[in-house]
Length: 284
Image 1 (cartoon, one colour):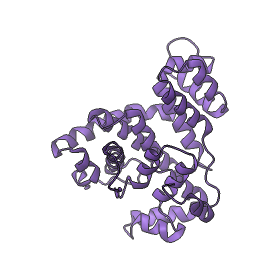
Image 2 (cartoon, one colour):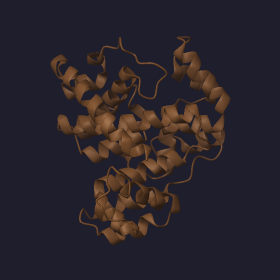
Image 3 (cartoon, one colour):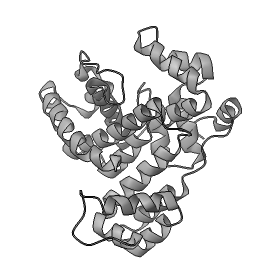
Image 4 (cartoon, one colour):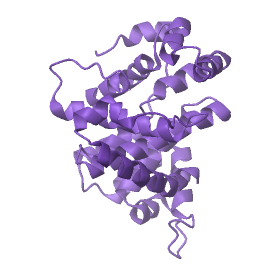
């Protein structure tokens, strides 16, 4: 076990239940890259909310082909495996929130933004599987969602105090909850029996304190989410305001990925475009 899940459960109460459909869909696609549309449709159909979301997107103007999509299987065929997987994961992540107000909206924007940025970085710099990067980015802040669910007003005050420059958000999280959002997020993914890669990425995407024995591929996975999270803060995605004075070249992930200052500006512009285009799918 990478983190003491039981201690965190004792402190915060029950953690969110495993998103069964999301785990099943990811497992099916990992075990068989050529998994049938029917198998994916069967898995998705176990959760009415997820199935409805997939059908709604398939029939949206963004994907509509002129023929009404009436079944989940047709939606899977129409959208393609990658889009379906991302929708299932994002719907499951959104469902973790017990309510959906301004703070939940910001956390959702941060999740989706980081996922899209991580996927783009992995694609542009050959830094791992883009779909795995999307997955890691999407769940990197699940600990924040759990903390917000547990004590909504307290977490709002922590975030606002950090934004006013009154201290480190992580230090204030530990002062109130006894744990940082990274530790809580890692405990959630540990409980859900996600891959160690996902757990470690959630635990260390910010501090980048990795054990020396960690393999290069895993280091790159953490670096991708580190940079993706930085891009979101730089552009104000999921934040009250943009950190426009941030020097992105100082991110630990930038150094590990070997990115030069000359590569950062085009990356920022490419992400602005892709975020504007791809984010729309998650608003449907």
